[in-house]
Structure formats: C-alpha cells, structure tokens
Image (cartoon, rainbow, N blue to C red; front, side, top):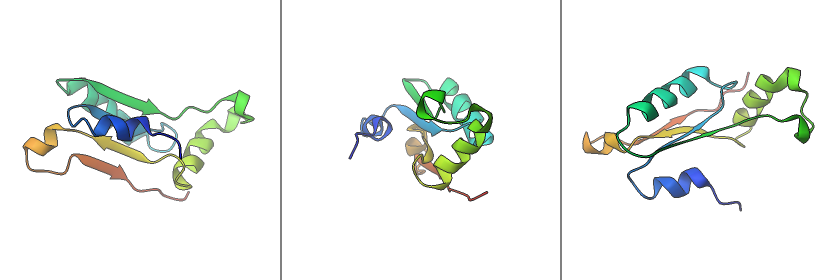
Length: 99
C-alpha cells in the first residue's frame, strides 16, 4: 500500500490537512482553502490533478475528478486541529456520490 501524505501529517495533530478535487466538490475545495488560510499553523492541501500524460482526455478532466472520488480512489476530507479544542471531531469527510 502506498504511503498517504495526508494521513501521515494528521498524526502530528497540529497540521491542517485537506484532500480536495475541484471537479468533484468545488464547495469542499473552497472551504479547505479558506480554513487553511485561517489556520494559525502549518497547513497542507493535497489536490487531485488530471494529466494528459496519464492518458486522460483533458476536455473531460472535471469528470475524471468526479470518477476518482466516486470510486473511492481519491477521498475528500478536511482535518482541522482547532476543532479538537472545541470538543469536536477534527475530521470532516465528504461522502462519495455517484453522478
């Protein structure tokens, strides 16, 4: 199994971490950028990006984002350590939805 940079960063407990895909959920992506900007500490945003070198038709890129999320290959989440101090779960997972 490949190492997951986001999961590794979350184990530190003081790093804002988000896994985003603009084509799958633009609202989750914007929330992640806003939260990372507001977070007083290190922040890491890992974004899915389609590439012609992977044999993907660039005119269908946003659909590739949706497919990657829907298949479970690219989970969408945000981890905000500030929520722990408020007694809340710091992890926010966005459910995969089939188009």
